[in-house]
Image (cartoon, rainbow over all chains, first blue to last red; front, side, top):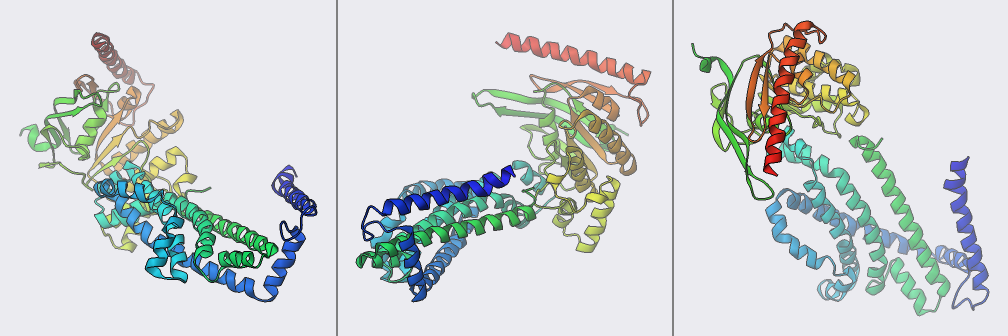
Length: 252
Length: 266
């Protein structure tokens, strides 16, 4: 009972209070400046009815998936390699440390110059946002593999390939999973930014487009959907993590 | 016939030095000789810093001696060898593998065909009494069970030498006694050469045919005690007490010397 109240009832009440406060607050301003939740819901319905919403969500999700997958495919192998070969890591680490603090957004002018307008610059920005967290956690996960695992492996005469694929990779996996998780968050945040800057479609573009027509209700509708979809992706990731954790024998 | 031809493991003037964090040259093990017969159960005991763990790591090939050599089966040991398996205090089990999967690891490393490997692994799990847990993951097991899995994993590849580095030190007293008896039963059945590091003197006398007492600064052999008692040993026997007393007296002497040396150093 207590659990039910704490886990379900309290959050729902907080949310309801927030919506009510918003609705009440919005009454004091013109809707073009500060739309009420009811206006936002109407805007969502309008966008949904004319199909704009679903097209843009589809495009955004596709861009996100492509960029994220690309980051995974590049960052994990590179991270495994750099984690395993300390000398290479030492050589390349300063470069990574200089590039990493540069916001993916700052790459935008170059991205347009190199890739033109369209999908590519947005994908590139999302890729960068996902790339560094995955790379860095993979490197540290490999380096944190307990020495005793490697001792056992060499004691039983396992070759380098077996040690790498059947000891280091699975041992580093829970750590890599943390990076994948962080990267989903950063990548999703940068999706909107990337689409606002150059793209002619997607949720980010939808928000910018609404601004151009002073449709504040649609701006907020876009924001709300970005938040909800982000939450859904995060929850999905959590679920996947749980399944893999049990499979890996690390979670109870 | 000299002992040189019959010894399974021979340490010849083995010395291990390393540079400490403060930049001092330290001698972990100082010019040490020791012969271990095939099938013998030898315990290394001593206070911390006596080099017993360094010594077993040298024998297992995880470290190389600064001078001298470790000779096993007539060959100089310079690297880990699947015929000489080390068992660690913290088990070294792979958490993503089941119990059976862990026991299979060594057989897979040897490229034993899958069906044969499985048969062998199941037989070894039977030997350590863990058949019922074969599909569990290590995190579902108690410490004693984990250590049995790691023993099974070692035995599955039929090594001629078992190196055991304080394998039961993290277990509660009851489990420890039980596993000591289990280990002796397995040793009697398979007769591998066992080198067993412990800081528990009773454990050393219960298990070892010979107990090698080591002393620190520098790490060296203080005394070798032949425990002429048949296995299984009754821990409450009079004869057991006699050996225990001898070892304890010697150990206290070592401890006192170490304490005095430490005081002197300060």
